[in-house]
Length: 377
Image 1 (spheres, rainbow, N blue to C red):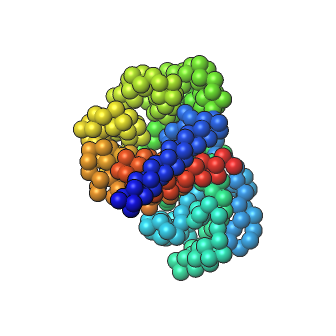
Image 2 (cartoon, rainbow, N blue to C red):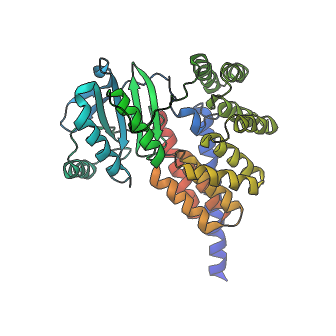
Image 3 (cartoon, rainbow, N blue to C red):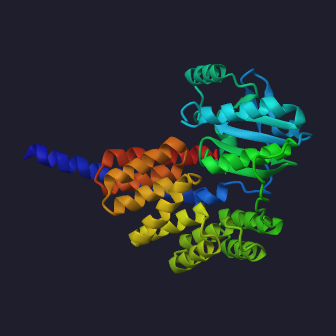
């Protein structure tokens, strides 16, 4: 009897701790002005300014993006030793670099091993680079500042910068998109691509600028101004998806759920193959309880392997559909792609809590809070 009472007290205490951690996390997010932040809003788009960085190379030198301002293009490859696809990505880019480095193309490998790089991490990174014989510079993003400023959602990821702006961005290493990327790189090097390179969609600069202003006002909690700029961005370019997601997130933060759903459905109607809007609508519907449509959308999104949140959104939807085993498999998949996503831990923490796994829920809420604070600092 005493043992049973102790277990009940322990469970009650863990639940109280979880509620406290979740409240602290949400209050921290609000205080830091991140309440309306979405995964999609952080991802750099074509035409966005490329953030400057200054990172240490493995040889100890300091490397800045701006020192390559006279090159035709800079290819940034974000990678780690723990990422299953990083080795393949680095080898492919090294092969390209070996052939075309004299044609105004600079490749930089940006290692994103951990929030802080230990001596053991550094040793593993050097060993990894030596084993696969990488010839382009390898830089250390020791506090993941560059990782976050470029809005990386998957490792590996590739961003191409030209003229100070992003001209190409590819999360992960999806098969078809990777070949398209290298065909694009061949044209930059003055070579004939293996197949005709279709002109990539480029959003209207005015739409990008208005969406950026909308995010700035949202961060300052000046919501009426944020609404106006997001709506203006959509008017300037109805096929540019980020402001739809930003606007929907803002509606949700104000409790305007029907407006949020309407906005996301308009986005899907404009671009039914966009994995970000599929995923955000799927997650919204899963929280609403419309699980059949949510799971259909999210299953479609994860097949593209270009939007990491789709995996943990699907995990959440499956957990609500009483498919716990499959749910945690998708959370694990998301974790293997990007272990630095605070939303992943927050959402999985909620699933753990709903499953009465209080110890695991506490650990995830704590990790979400740690990542939020580190990203802000």
